[in-house]
Image: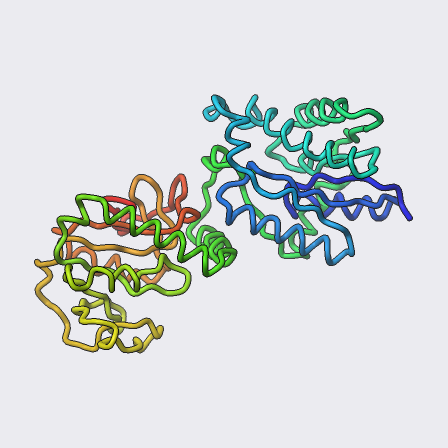
Length: 357
């Protein structure tokens, strides 16, 4: 039996080399996952799941402190615009490491440490300050303040990330640090795909219902008569219930894939839908609508959007070829919360949305 130590863990990439070192040097780590800073919730789940997968593969216990993002927002209130490695980060460390220290004290640990020091995004002195302060709140507790980037651990970190195929993010987790993301289209699509995969079917329906109820209260929707919308796939904001709720009051149109293009067809009810030839997406079994002047609103799905209206699609360019035919219509992008990014990588031919629902 090794020496027990509580290891506060921020993510799997930062944990791998440290855990390996501990096991090789007679330490018995218990993983404590406390990261209420991570946003959105799907990002939190993906990172937690990666930590859990790795811990379980090694037979280690992992403790989930759960996600309380609102408490974290209260903790850093007024520091939202502080730079990375500034006072907001210090307060964030104090909150998370105090939680770890409390758990350590209540469960018989005399030493705890954190993988935060493995991250190149963080300052060693801030982590030491926060850890020692947290330890001082409980008698007999010590914070191991060694620098976990030294002794070859930083190099080993990168190797383990590749060996384990870890989800390896490029920001620390909070919505304020997310501003530094500069991923290309491929990496953005991969990241969004993992976040949506972490959502349950119930959560997708819940968020979809909230999106449509909010949209139904807008003047844009109330004034629209002809609407081009999409029939949703499992990883998109769900549309069937919304369409059927308004089908008797609005004129809905759906896209249909023909070769490499989208054409528009009138929606006449679910009984008039057939599975599309290319992807099996339901589409109307009717004639192509060539006069698009009656469509005043286009609701467009995407893999990611930003607040400036930039859109990242799936990579086939279907909507980029269709939307110029609807220049007169208002274009509204729709997505889950986890698909809103600070900035979306765009090219000259990418069409901006007028509004994001």
